[in-house]
Length: 183
Image (cartoon, rainbow, N blue to C red):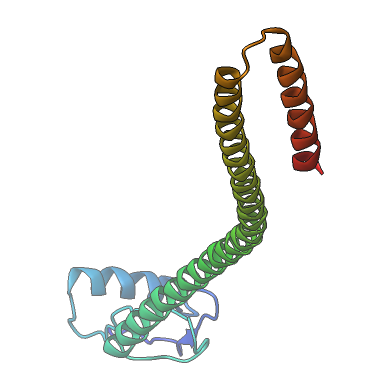
């Protein structure tokens, strides 16, 4: 004897359909699973995954495509999040490099000033060395002249007492020469 099946209502939250008569539903499900179709109408349990269109029935192939698209969408969203994180990290690194570059530039400016000061001191020291060499050359030439002059005088002077007078006058000329060089 054929069974009558109550109208099928979709469940909003689950993935199966309910039948109002529980005994008929039990037979229906067990027969459908075993593959018996005799004189009853058997409806296989459709796959229904309410994701985007809740409460709507969609064919199995279309569900698969929707699930595939949702998976690829989720993967793309995850990739977007990853890229945004990477962008933030790279921006932070770029900011750090900019700060380091700014610090290096300011440090370089300080070093340049130190180099300029050092070069100025070197120039001043070179001038001082040149002045000292001039003074040494003047003293050497004076000393050589004085030495030759005293030697010639000592050869001319027969009296040794007169040599002291000549030495004293040479010494006084040396003091005058040193006073001229220092002023």
